[in-house]
Length: 405
Image (cartoon, rainbow, N blue to C red; front, side, top):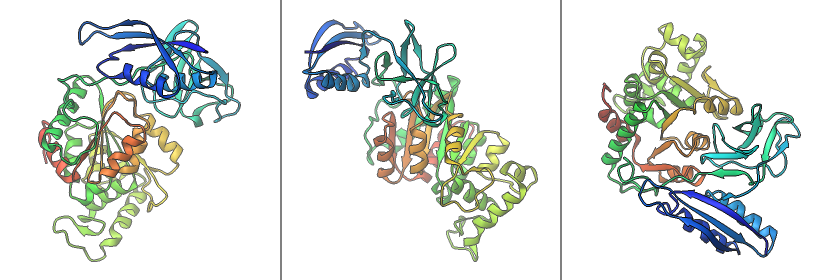
């Protein structure tokens, strides 16, 4: 029977990684023999195992090696295979498709960390033997691309320690969690991230404005608890509409009543910003005097507005080319330690696909399906909270020091 030895190391017992790997081997029709096993003696010590995997043929063996590799099992010998990209934006057949887990490659006898890791991309070895994670459209002709699994090692996400602020939450989506405790944990995680020099990303949808929660997000931005905002044309437009007309979707937020000709307000708001040339220009000219986007400009923080096919206008700051919008978002990901995704399915899934597994990711929506979609599409590190965004934003603002509403 063809066989190969894999090495697995880390907190492989308490995270159940070892048992997962052994189960995969048997499930896929293989056999295993543990050649070496060393168990850590304390909670902080790592354990390791060398496992010989046997299979009835090479096709089955390759399948087992591919699946177990995604759980941290690394082939004990060999380096990465590199093939040149045949065209700009085209990868060689058999390219290694990345996960969002911390990844290394073995090249020229040494292990190298892959920078900017995200799922569903490729690994390109650049000048100086530096490996980078690149989306398909950024790969250039003759770039050296990693193919196959050999020489690639990933580190699975470890089980959270009992003292971690999210240790009580678990990863399943539930409407029955103690929501105030969850919000308190998120506020603590944000404070820890800033204390560690990491950035906080907020991804928001227009329901934040419609429900009257915009003032809480504005206050959190002004208190400098958010470093970058991802949104679409809708959140920015209705925030500006609220600032200029006191309405959102034509409904007066102070009374909840539709305003005469209110259905035109978002278009008139967009038109005024387009006349100014940009949101920043509108702030400097006094056209825009309050709101979330005003806070982004005056605090200041970075923001990326990614467009969609249904956008009115759009606002001049909206990036309507989806590939350029992706790249603008990617440019803001390095250094992010906490990502909050509130009341937006599409932007949450898009952002989640770009985040490394090391980023604490929290998804808040009144619809459990929105939270489940994010996790089902590979953002397994995400924690889901099913609740109204107005309640969440109000509670979060109340728990962050220096936030004045």
